[in-house]
Amino acid sequence: MSYDDNNIFAKILRGEIPCDKIYEDKYVLSFYDVNPQKKIHALIIPKGKYVDLDDFNENASKEEIYGLMKGISLVSNRLNISSKNGKGYRAISNISENGGQEVLHLHFHLIGGEKVGKMVEK
Ligand code: AMP
Image 1 (cartoon, rainbow, N blue to C red):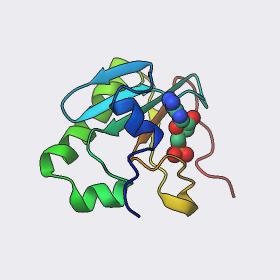
Image 2 (cartoon, rainbow, N blue to C red; image 1 turned 45 degrees about the horizontal axis):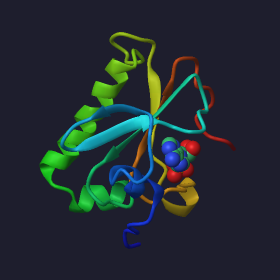
Image 3 (cartoon, protein in one colour; image 1 turned 120 degrees about the vertical axis):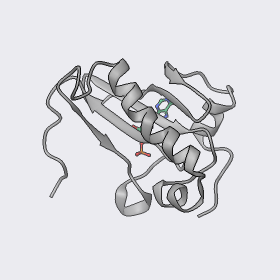
Image 4 (cartoon, rainbow, N blue to C red; image 1 turned 90 degrees about the vertical axis):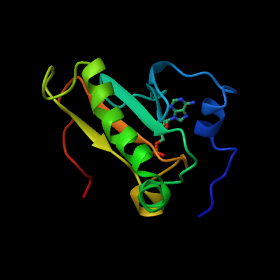
């Protein structure tokens, strides 16, 4: 699937729609999910135009991949949910139709602050 510049996260990256920002650097932007599923529900997205994790791993540079992976832990530390300074969390990336992806710009959900529960519905 090709990248659609009108997806909501692209608009957030361009500053056309506000977000509740947690962290930003050259490679990533992190902000709170508008519809939190648990006490803490953050999102982290790469700044590059990637539809999903498969697209990212195939086409992103090593620096972008490193930046996103590092960014996840940076944000989890900042939110005090990491295994080091909190009680842990779940990092999820939904991919395409069967994964239940709604916004077609790669993102990881960082969910924690309390027990997250069952991993998947049966
Ligand atoms: P997914 O189903 O993995 O594509 O998740 C998309 C997520 O984006 C959902 O959890 C939404 O609540 C969240 N979301 C949609 N619009 C916004 C927005 N403007 N700001 C923050 N989060 C959003």
